[in-house]
Length: 404
Length: 205
Image (cartoon, rainbow over all chains, first blue to last red; front, side, top):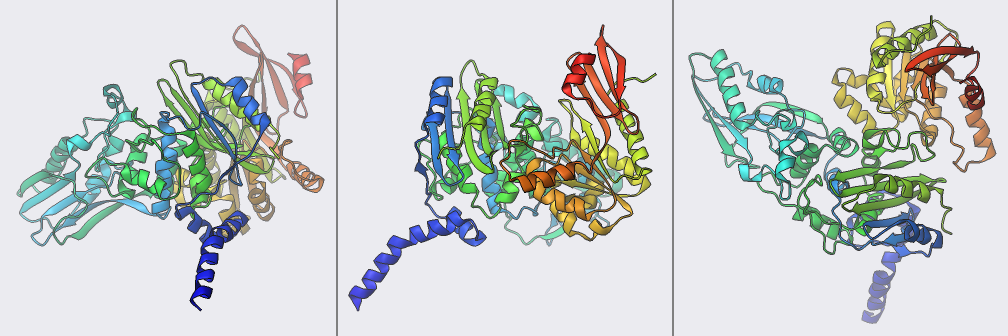
């Protein structure tokens, strides 16, 4: 009896991955697909595709890394695919994947005014990129404030405002705006910071309640206060899908950072280990991976095209893949790729993400070719970045026949 | 004298003129084509929406949920009027014949969701920069024929394209007009009843 059970258990354990693989490849069942997405296994195999290998070897130098996969998990070609590269904004493909997996795409971020038993008020944000002073006015429009108004603004520590690896120069521009939880217009104007907000709120309340004593203090952000608070007023952001689309299609750095901090519950610190662990527990090749932000602006980020292509392949099994893919830029049609190769055959066929930093250009995503979907990831790290060469390579890959 | 628009704002005014003519015409499906780089198509779609909604109830449609979500964020005041092709087709609005519909940048791979919506919608329908056919997609002859007959149901409303040494424009119901560039100015060359092909353009420039 024991022997029979043992045989049954061994058979089950041996055959289960194959059974799962068959179900997954049939791509019919959303639940099974998502189950496959969540397990620490990935079924990818190498296929010999001489045309693809010839194309890579002929056109590329050592500054490039490329991975090409087909929709069935076959690796068609690899070129320096294990080499660690700075991905620039291609990192957003990973961080927004994390976000869309954790959230319902139609959820929102909240900016709230909370109140405790003693009628102390707490203004808590979650990095809504569209938060405006008008929204703050709405939150402060309370009918019955006490004679003593105590209001606390919760905001991240100054030391956490920028992720590691953002340069002094980056921080001077709107694309490198600080990542804070109460960011007026995504902190595009760095003078509208928490001290400005404190002053603004004070003036606003003083005008409306001239006889009240007004005390406003700034506290360090905490995800939950050790007090029972009730909601006084709340403002919802645009839905998560529109914010993920903003992060991917328009490559909005603030939004990608803010979304990741919310999804990973990490407003109090800069830690991207959760993203790395999430990738690891989905069976993805993370050897040498270094992640220091969610937007890709950090020069300390290091990834391989092997990881990006495997990730994009596995994302196809995620329950929210339809939304994830629809958040990407489309070559010649929308987002950061809208003005590229408009009148070419490739126009409208590549859904992906660009990445640009000095000495970096990256392009990764889904290529639609002859009713099939291919996954392509290209990164160049060089003092002489050649953007045209990357697009030309993409066009050449599009022209190649399917590898049978 | 026929002139090319000075800037995008002037082009949008021309687009509105042609759309107004379309509303009074017997046809129901119209294409609007701005064939140049650097345009924010959502702005064009919204401008057309503003114009058409003064005449009638108007809806904006996009290929996928991401594009819809982004448009709803940018134009919160008309959030409830923005749909995907699929969700609009499944909504009661599909039967609203006393309305206008704008479709943004439909692509060949959207055909399966775009075509059923078009077939079910009986109001005035404008498509901005549509791409209906793709010679490279390996589809059977039956589907190819179906696509061809579908394309024929569309009438051009507005078209503007810079060419090498010239420009091509059409404002419905006028003919297609070809302009030649000379000393940084565009001079009207010839008009055509149907859209001129590349060879005709080449000969006339």
